[in-house]
Image 1 (spheres, rainbow, N blue to C red):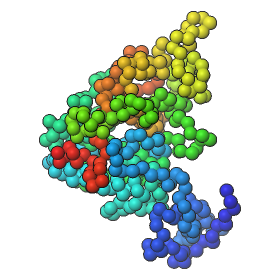
Image 2 (image 1 turned 60 degrees about the horizontal axis):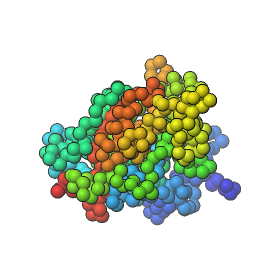
Image 3 (image 1 turned 60 degrees about the vertical axis):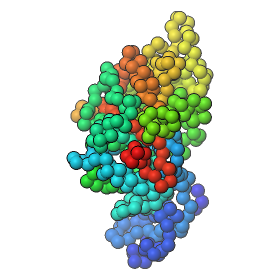
Image 4 (image 1 turned 180 degrees about the vertical axis):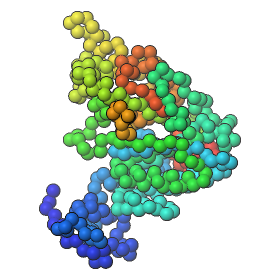
Length: 424
């Protein structure tokens, strides 16, 4: 990094370019603290003093990343994992119907389009993300099963949105499950993500109230020497066999076809959201070989226990000198294989979470599991049923919240998300 001198501290009245009339845009000017660090006086930072802003410089690669709001599909599905995430569900207020819901989705869509472009919110912007770029922000909207009854649209409710079956690993908190409306926010900068969260909450106004909110994180893009599959809080590579947009059958597996039913879900997808607690104290007592046997892959590089590297096909028939399968029969990676589940596949796009500690000191941490598929009854459900019957990982996780949401296709220019449902 080239040597850079730090400007002397001056009073706020002396700092040039600090006023709105300076002409420096929020996307062109990096924040002072991020560019130079705060300048402290000999006594430790006198009140009323701040560092002068750095000259206008290009955004870093992280800040410059931008996803598009308008398109065939909603953003936040096929984009890479982001560093910060917020999941939030709303229930419509009493007396709110289809007309008010349409107005809300129109407001949300306008706000999402502006924020994803790195612009301020359309009303009463909080300045939380001032000076930051878009930072790969995505905002995604979905409808829960209960939304259709509240808005008189029961006949438009998709059959694929029927409630998920019960699973033996479920310990679900109903207060943190389901909801009329669901919003997924992701960004590579925590302040950009929070800024979007507050804007969406404020836009809800009196039309909807927050039902639950969950906050997550992933490794920041660029933090590793080369791009790689993400690790979860168990230290395992997570997502090795995810479907890829380059797969010939990707769209068929992940998105509702244009000819599908109902028509308003064309190019949309269904999101299964599960808050999965990881029992890390128990997991971390296992040796690395024992952990690898539970998963069926090497912890170091994600390679199958049958040999090779991360992308090497798993040899399910390979045995050791004792005649035992090198990939145990109850290994998580063996059970979840599409070819062992009638071809069932889903696009996993999770965030990790950590919400402090229980009274006994156990960490409340795990995975905000989000998976996408054209039909959850052919994607998530058969795989989870198979896991229910004997997954070695089940002893170390607990499903504590759940939701299923219909996520319509992307909005065309001039449209808002869900318009084909609410005005069709």
